[in-house]
Amino acid sequence: MKIFPLEVPITGRVRVCLELLKKMELRNKVLVDVGCSFGWLERELAKSGAKKIIGIEPDSKAVNFAKKHVQGAQFLLGNALSLPLKENAADIVILFDIIEHVPVGTETKVLKEAFRVLKPKGKVLLSTPYDNFFSKVLDPAWYFGHRHYQQSTLIKMFDKNRFEALDIFTRGSLFSCFFIAWFYIMKIIFRIPQPRNSFLERLDDLGYEHGKIKEIFLVAQKTEK
Image (cartoon, rainbow, N blue to C red):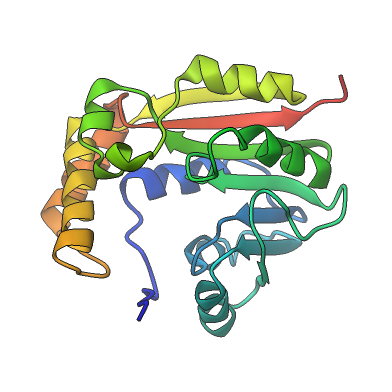
C-alpha cells in the first residue's frame, strides 16, 4: 500500500526548485507540472496567483490522493511522453526530476511534447541529477539505470529541440549526496515510506547553498527557429 505525505520538507533540492519557479512571473500564467506525484508542488503554489495549475502524473493512486487533498489545481492522468493537453496550452512546463526516469533515448520526445503544449516564448523549468563522480556513486538508483547529465549535454538537447537555455547551474554538496544515499537506504531496505531526519535535512539544505556537484537546474525558453 502506497503512503503519500500531506507535506514535504522545503529543504535542499525541493527548496531550490521552488525558488527557481517563484522567480518566474506566475500571476495569470498556466503552469503544467509533469510528474506531479501527490501534488506537493501544487500545494505550495496555491497562492502564487497563477491562472491555472495542472499536475500530470502516471500513478493513478497519486492522482487520486492529490485530487482529494490539494485544492486549487487540476490533476490529470498522463506521462511526459504524451501530455493530455492541447497545443499552446501552457506558459510554463515543469520537469523537476523527470527526464532521467523516462526510457533511454526518449528525452527528445519529452522536449517535443513540452514544446507542443507551450505557448510562444513559454518556458521549461528542469532539474535532474548532475553527472559528477560523487553524485553517481552515492546514488543507489544510479546502479540500476538512474541517469545523470552534464550541463553541455542538456544545453545541446534543448537547442536541438528549439529551446534556448536562459539559465543553468548546479547545486548540492557531498552532504547532499550522502543524504540521498541515506534516504534510499531507509526507504528501500528498511521500508520506511517517508524517512525523515532533521539533522541530515539541514546538512542537505546547507549543501544546496554553495555546493555544485549534486543537481542541475535549467530554465529554457521555446523559440521559433
